[in-house]
Image 1 (cartoon, rainbow, N blue to C red):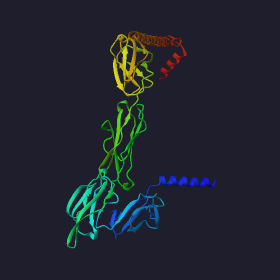
Image 2: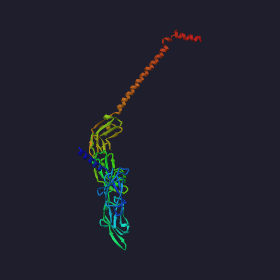
Image 3: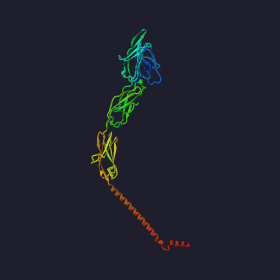
Image 4: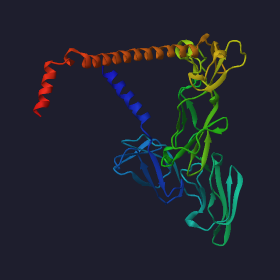
Length: 439
C-alpha cells in the first residue's frame, strides 16, 4: 500500500512537471563570456507568480543556492539554471569567465528576426584594432578599429561558431590576438505551423474547422502571431487574423482543394507556411423526387395559371430542376439553386396545355425524373353556363316573389273599397255623417 501511494505521488509529480512551464534565466549584462574579475547578475523569471518567492539555483545540474529573491550574482564559469514554486527547471545558460586578453561576447539569447550584436573586447577595455569577425572559420566582417558587429534580422542559418581577431598594444609593441570560438544558436521564434482540419472528406453543406497550430517561444510570449488561410494559392479570408482557427460554416464541392496556412510574427515580420492538407468534399446524390401541382390533382380551369412544384428528399450542391411535357423534347424551363424545391408557372393555360407533365433534378452526380402528372382542363364556357343558370334561377325566383307581393297589394285595395263596410247605413258611414253635421 505504501509503495502504491509512493508511485502515485511520483506519477502526479512527473505529470505536473510536464505541464508546468519552464522558468527562464536572464543575464545582465547579456553576454555569455566575461573577463575574470567581472560579475554578472542572474535573474530567474517564473510563471504564474505575481511576487518573487523562493528560487532554487543550480550550477552544472547541482543545487547551488536557495534564495528568497529571484536574482543572484556570480563570477564563476558554469551552466546555470533555476526553478520556482510555480515553474519547472529552466534551460541552462552557459557562462564563461575568461582569463584571455581578447574575448568575443555574444548574447545569451537571440531569436530569428532580431538584431545580433557581436563584441570583440580586449582585457581592461583596451583598444582593439584591425578587428575581424569569423563565422565557421570564414571572414564575416572587418573593422580598422574596435567596433561591434551588428547583423539585422538574423535567421536560423546564422547559427554557428564565431570568433574574432584583433591587434592589441602592449607598451611598445603590437600583438595580434584571437578569441576563443563561441557557439551561437539562433533560436526559433515559433515552429512552422501545422494545419489540422476536423475532416478531410466532409459532406457538402456541413461546417469545417481549420486550425493553424503553432506557438511562440516562452521567451518571446509577449509578441503577437497573426494567421492567414489559403486554398490552391488563393487566400480564403482576406487579411491577417489574430485567431489561429478558421470556421467554414458550410463547405461545397467546389471548395475541394489543397489547404494551407501561414503564421506571421507581426513585430519581426517573420512568416512561416504550414503543410498542405487535401480536402475532398463529398456530394450527396439526389433521391426522392416528387412533382405536385397547384391546383392539386392537376385539374385547372381554362385561363387560370398552373403551378408545377418539383421537390427532392435529399441531395446537395447546385441542383438544376427542369420541367417537361410528354411529346415535347425541349424543357419548358430550368432553374438552378442550392434548394430542395423549385416551382414553374404556366400562366393562362388553355386546351393545348393539357397533357402529362414531369420534372427532373440534376446536381452533377446523378439525374432523376419524377412520375408523370396528368393535367386536365375544366372548360370555362361550361362553367359560365352553370353560372348563368344559377343567375337565371335567382332572377326567376325574384320575379315570382314580386308578383306575389303585387297580387297581395291589389287584393287589399279591392277589399278596402268594395268590402261590406263600404255600403250606406253601416255604422262606419253613419258616424262619418254625424261628424260632418256637427261641424
